[in-house]
Image 1 (cartoon, rainbow, N blue to C red):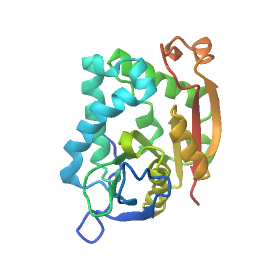
Image 2 (image 1 turned 90 degrees about the vertical axis):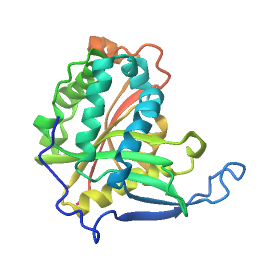
Image 3 (image 1 turned 135 degrees about the vertical axis):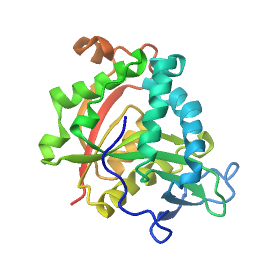
Length: 244
């Protein structure tokens, strides 16, 4: 999987950029002594580390990925790693660090995609079923490309927040930075499908419009691939935001 769009500049002056510096009032004192954080471009030398984090954390913690056991499907895992590499090659993914530290405590892989690129079909069974759900929502219920009249959108291909720092507002700040990235590179619309309540709340807090919602109990009635065994999350939601 390769994307046509690439970041138009990545010299030392413009890359990496810091998008926000914020203080978390929700940071637990027993875990976090320094509650100042920053959101910035994920630098190229951290790409392999980001992939490792997503492979060992996102594929396990994300309810849909875990339910379909993507990590246990070798073909799906190999394909999604290549997918992440293609996204990272666009150089617009963001990381969160504590002030004074370069440890990646939060991460969101962002990509600019056309509709034909969005509709790609993996070969691995586990990941293919998840992708079919995304395409089904777009084709049947809400198509952001058509509804906003745009050829490309910005969306996410994976995300992670260290468990010690969840509920500290990092998810919300990572979602907030999507607007900054979109405006910077003239991408007017973001569209996200979130199964996690934390990330759904982050989208709502950043004035994303909820365009579609369905419970995981009802989803299998619409399509066979919509069955997610053992899933604990309640709803799958599509959020969109027009930046300007």
